[in-house]
Image (cartoon, rainbow, N blue to C red; front, side, top):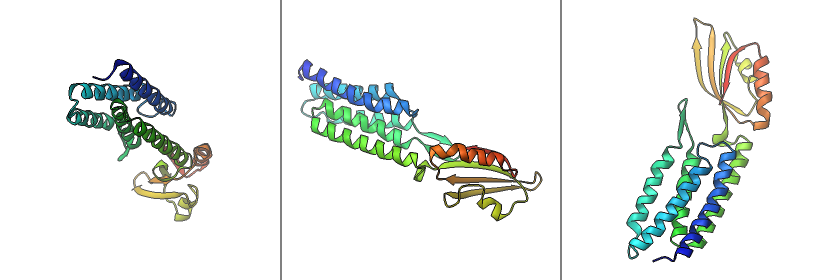
Length: 209
């Protein structure tokens, strides 16, 4: 049997670690916030402690069931919008924090803190990439433009060298062209981009994701 004081200390450690991650996610308005990360991590820790008590010789089946169940919970964080799926980082983070809770419940403190450091390193790097609009953090722009329009006109609609047109749709009856493009733009530059699109007489409507 695990000493009640030791079990309490493990739960408190997990609570504090999960609180930091959950607060960061909450402040950035991610799909999964403070409460979920705390519940997942402390719940996984409590189940790991229970597994160690009930099945001391072989707790792996119960622990494996915990991680599998958390995987289904993380899948709920995925969001589908306009043929694109978002939330993979948050879903993976839910699973990682559950694993951290299991490790803490089993008493592997070194593994817990090393894993926690890796998690924060990834979060900080991801925030840097997002702030610079790199990779999957590119903004998606949907435009409706008056037809006819020349290739030269398209090139000046969005920031040069930072845009990639993915889809074109032409409505001959309405004399309009629909465009979908990826734009690598920093968050602080988004207002300028929206203002430029608003002032462009050719642009009939636009949407930024």
